Image (cartoon, rainbow, N blue to C red; front, side, top):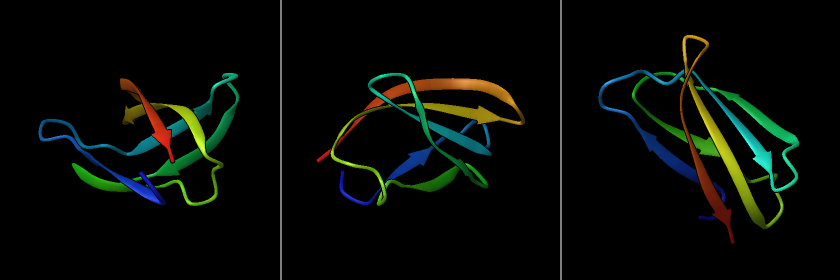
Length: 68
């Protein structure tokens, strides 16, 4: 992963993504539209991050990502 990554959700539209650093601090919130979207991580430093994905304010999924 470099400056962005792709999220695809065939069943649920994604409208918001939160990114947290390894310390659990919120470092980015991005509004998205649709079931296929790009999340910009250009401004984040190299490291491990945790992502929380939302649909209409409801939590959908979390995942770990690594920016190289």
